[in-house]
Image (cartoon, rainbow, N blue to C red; front, side, top):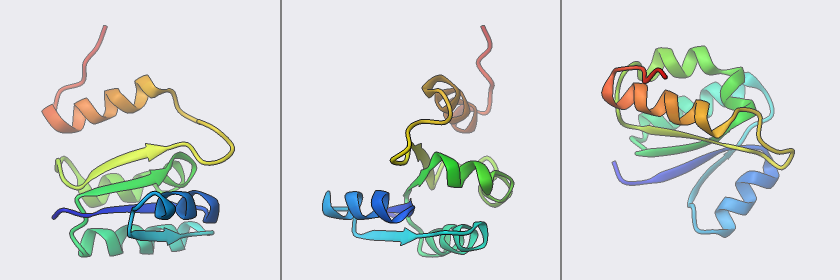
Length: 105
């Protein structure tokens, strides 16, 4: 496991490919997103960048597939329309996955 992949809309994937990310999967439907996500898991990609909108649409599948595993690391990024979730919510989810404990104020 040592590769990075991007799953998203055409513009986002193109931008990351221009930036050097070799594996990119353009998706338009939830079914395509699930197939692309599963493909990344099967190819043992270590970091999966996925747009927030797509991730929220297939959240149950992502959680069911990776469970409490640390790898692959799933990083949700905004697409061209901007951020959906706050940065704090994403960091809280990442901490919970990594250490298994939810940090509460």
